[in-house]
Image (cartoon, rainbow, N blue to C red; front, side):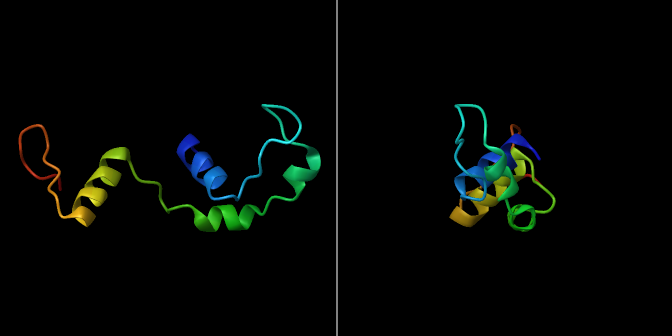
Length: 73
């Protein structure tokens, strides 16, 4: 799982808050995870930052030009 996918799953509440220390979960917390729910929520396949920026720009109706001023394809 990429760091971005992990952060998304954590933010979405699919991965619990650390409960043993600031860097560790308990065994019970890990056994309670629903791996299928996490996998189902992830985009397939993950997209790049540039592709995400292009999608946001398109959704907002603003062009996202490249360095040469042309639209990405």
